[in-house]
Each structure stands twice: as structure tokens, then as C-alpha cells.
Amino acid sequence: MDDDTNLIKRLGGPTRVAELLGYDKARGGVQRVQNWLTRGIPSSVKVERPDLFMPGLTTSEPALAKEGA
Image (cartoon, rainbow, N blue to C red; front, top):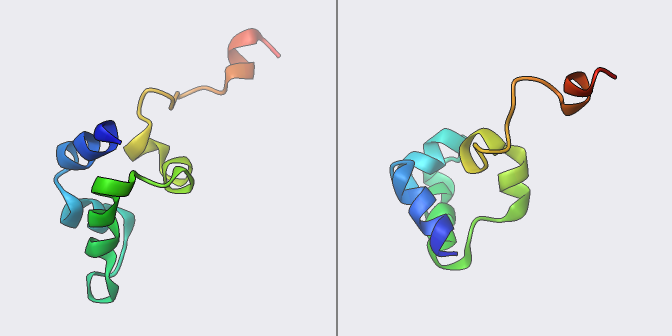
């Protein structure tokens, strides 16, 4: 979870991450992200936004295209 905490901080903190995800501040969006500092970022959120949370896994080409399939 320490990696998740560092990632949130590198992205600009809970308020910025909530904005990037389109979470409504008035409806607890920032608090939701703040909770991830101790609980970790839910895997479903990471999968929905790999561009933010899994940048090393995103590629410009599908894996099959590289194999010639």
C-alpha cells in the first residue's frame, strides 16, 4: 500500500486524483481517495484507469499485433 500512497502523492494528492477520476468533491470524492492512502487503491479503479495507476502496463499496440497475429 505504500506504493499506492506514493502514487497518489506523485499524481498531486487526493484532491487532484479525485479530480482526475471525475469524483464529485461535494459528494465525498476527495475523502474516498484520502481513504486509499491507508487502504490502498482498489484494484477495480486501477483496472479502469491504467493510464493513471499502471503506466508501465499500457502500450500503444495490442500484444497480438506484435506477434503478427
